[in-house]
Length: 240
Image (cartoon, rainbow, N blue to C red):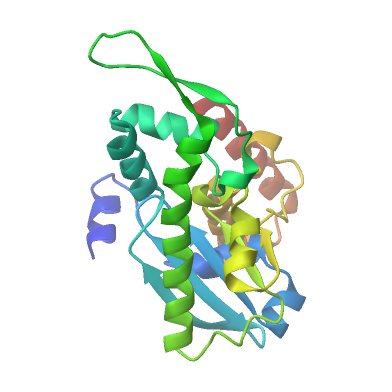
């Protein structure tokens, strides 16, 4: 109801509502994966969504109340930096495993107090991030075991969301889960710019794909549909 109210206050109308995991599956998962069994892990800013697919449909969803913001907060506390600088450090230099960074690499660290900037090792930054990522993945596996679903993913795990972009993330997940893990790749859109083909924008692509498939009035208008997608892509590029 809150979502409906927020949208309606923007003078927009809602025609359909879809579970985010279903929308994501349209552009991130293959038919073979959803048929044999796969688990989609969407590491967002505030939460991590977990979705289990097998026999061609979604079977289970759960939420881990941790995400990228918790990593940013850990960096801010550990390095005594502002939330903004912590987020920038995470994106520019962060890694999910210490082994994925050069031990001797140093990165700049500014000081909001006006003192001279100093440097820290990138290994230190990764050592702050790695335990939190391990915690998130461990909670995912605990939830799957409690639901009796840890045996499901014959096709392994697929990671998406901004948190999945950290170097070493898929390797860390493979170590902890002892299953194949891949980073989700957006499919089904021919002319999407490269800068938009990453997990941060997977939900937007999934919602567009779902809407196209479930709107009969657009189904027979391929030329209009292509024009709409081109206009939408141009708008996204101009905005970001």
